[in-house]
Figure 1: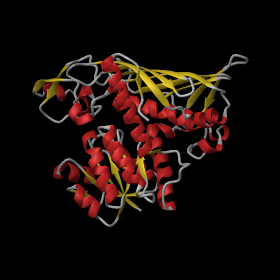
Figure 2 (figure 1 turned 45 degrees about the vertical axis):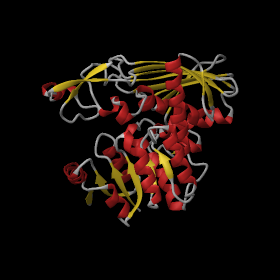
Figure 3 (figure 1 turned 120 degrees about the vertical axis):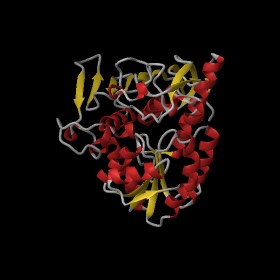
Length: 384
């Protein structure tokens, strides 16, 4: 079982590490050019530096392809990999538009033995699996409403720049489409609730940003100061830095979401609080080994990520004893454990916990409704 990773920027090497920890051999990597491919392959000790997508897909050793390239390339690469008979794990978003993602869903359904997954890794924090188990088992009772946020500060200043801020590279929505979709996917995954309408207000805080003429890495350490010395040019920005979204779910439940990439001091914080008839639960990604459980009738609780305290579904994806924290890199290992368990078993299992192409398509449909709502300043129904 060998895999290839497309993308050598921020997230590609995270895939490589996660795959290795899950027991999958990574044969090679494809970067944006020969130099990046060869440099990345050498740095990670990989056998091969691929020079084109065609080389990856023609390699008979490769059973699966991980796509961690810029967003605009996802759909084309995922479809080509499927058609080449490879299993596919694609970074979010699955595509740039719901039309593209619908094509990918149809293509994956024609190939029922091939795994087609979207890398929503936050599902695989053990306490999120525990939350899913408790909500779907009815422990909390009927879900009334959900509040949450995903906030960062890495694009706080007008001279903060990355390809993701450009609509032609990252998509028409950014704060919502880039990180908000993690929250949207997580809420659906935990509760099973389906959104039927949205009301959104999106804002471009910096309508002009100053683009360095050199290459800029995602989440680059600003203290290094290299970017400050780069020559820059102003570019117009149409993707939002901030968004507030109200959601109506089928059955009556409600949700509110705040997304921001311009909140000073917040590096990468996702949180949700689910309020239901019997209890409430809250989880925050910056403290991923704790889940708050609220009650009216007795003292509130804090559940620690300890395999001995978790439901078997969550325990399966918690490898270390209580007090031995698991974090962001571990979620990649765990999602790949689930994906490759299906690959080795001969195809997708409908009960598996990882996100499928259908899940990725759902998020794109929802993002398009959110964008339409913001432009119209009105409630918009989510297409089925």
